[in-house]
Amino acid sequence: MTALARGDRNAFLAAEAESRQHLGFPPFGRLAAIILKSRDENVLRSTAEAHRRLAPSGEGVEVWGPAPAPIYRLRGEARMRFLVKARRSVDVQRYVRTWISDVRLPSAVRRVIDIDPYSFL
Image 1 (cartoon, rainbow, N blue to C red):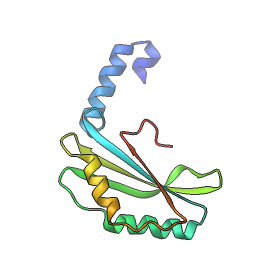
Image 2 (cartoon, rainbow, N blue to C red; image 1 turned 90 degrees about the horizontal axis):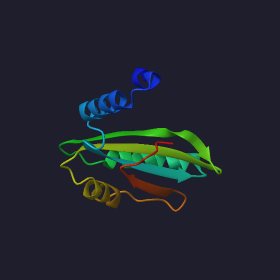
Image 3 (cartoon, helix red, strand yellow; image 1 turned 45 degrees about the horizontal axis):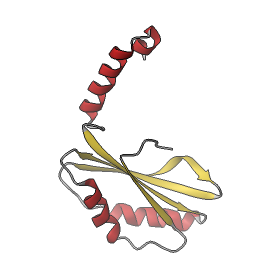
């Protein structure tokens, strides 16, 4: 941020790239967001816990969550989210597909998957 305040775009981009590489964030790693939405918060929470229990372990994969979305309620629906962080070499789409195939999704819950999301809201 200091570089931006100085108007030094190149220094900011270099610092951002270094930080992303250190953390394993894109483009040096992969992310996937899984968002669960429902008007029924009890069903939403139990579905989120079922997702958590059934998250497969995988080398080079971390699953964060469930956690309330930063904007928890949107258009009358409560939202819980997971973030999957994986090494660049991991097929994150296959990991997520395998994971969600094991979780029964109640009709009151919708699930949205975003590979390499631009926003975390």
